[in-house]
Image (cartoon, rainbow, N blue to C red; front, side, top):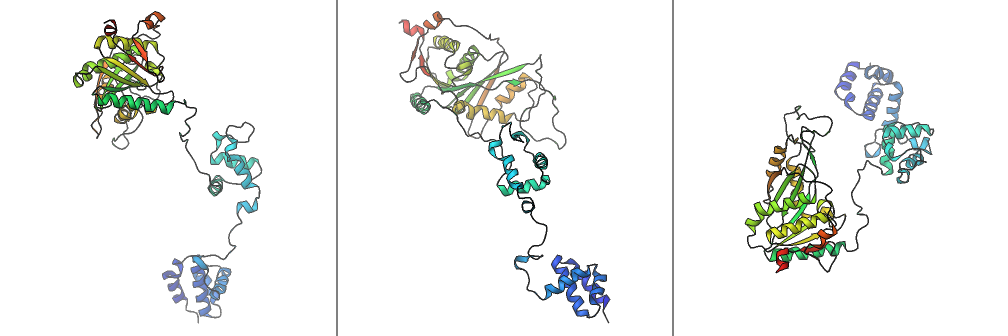
Length: 403
């Protein structure tokens, strides 16, 4: 007599909670213990097929599979790559680096999504899903990658030597107690309720609302922040211009720094060392830059030493990673709704290392395209260094030259 009630209790308490092999073996052991008719009775109680219980009876007489396997070796469908021998080679051909931008290839680098790869393989006669494409790509060693800025490209043969030259001159000036400033223009910023990069904390589901399109507001326009960073003092000055980024505006920003910060900190200074990029409004070949610096030297009586970083090396300019990056971090996620907001956010920039920044709006109008004649250049009291005079030069006050 088969104890159906007992089998049912044991099944619900134990057997039904096992894995696939455990349920199979449990049912087989109950059927063997029940004797004649046990397979039919256990199948009715557990819902397992008679064939499943039959496999369980065979498992009872064999050792347990290694490593916790549930199924026997060879179980499951054959691998895609076994059923379709050319699949892997075709997939690799689609995504290999040689396909980048090649119009003769069936798939370009801009179309490497899983769906498009699966569709392209389908056009080649393969049957595969996007998820299977992902698994095969992982097996091939592919993953989604972002671009990495690593290739410097061509560089000037004297690039490193110019760095050493700048470093030597800066250290000499600092040892003498003379001011050293790093100057540059930060990127132009749209003024208005426009999206600003980065994020900040707000109540969940209530982000700041800004305009969808970044069309320039004709009333507010753009602003041009020009920065002056005092290397020794770890202090910055930023003039926020409202017209054009010209050499006249750049030197006016340096002049304002000297009047509001530099003169008080360096009352006995006789020289000023400036490090700048090789291009832009303070570029090495900009005539107006040198003419305006001559005017500044005449006004202040300072001897101005200028050293330009070689082309393509602006990221080594101190102001980039000592001042501008902190300004960008300070106003992340904040729309620059008006000019006053720009000035206040820049002026509120501080760091744990003691950076202090002052800022003011420069509402003057600076004309673009101002031409400087050869005669004007001939009147400059300028002399180049022995090493790369186009990058390193000194401008002295003309009053001193006349004495």
